[in-house]
Length: 127
Image 1 (cartoon, helix red, strand yellow):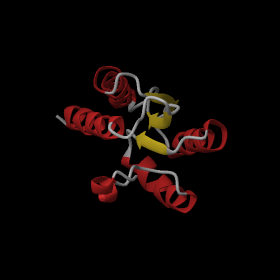
Image 2 (cartoon, helix red, strand yellow):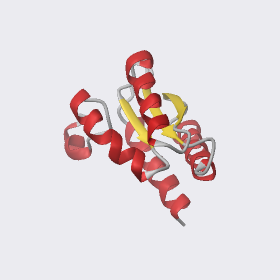
Image 3 (spheres, rainbow, N blue to C red):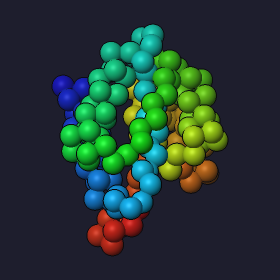
């Protein structure tokens, strides 16, 4: 049930982004940090598959998804976050198989301005 909830939530996020993309604009890079190895790999694989499917079917591949393995640890999530922000230049990051990773990275993401999409201004077409 948790995996379905995560999949539906991530699909909704992809749908929201689909309305923001214009044909002439370059693809928006979205980082996905999730566990693909070790203890939480089952959850992370489902998350990756759900996000990929939503991008393909619902958003017609409008986004460039860059997936990083958090390796079922906060240290792995931090390494993935740093790569996505500093090397890949993503604007948004979604995913996280582990609450501990999300909690550990939240203050860092808030300071850097990179993080989750802000749905508070969606009426005005802004992120």
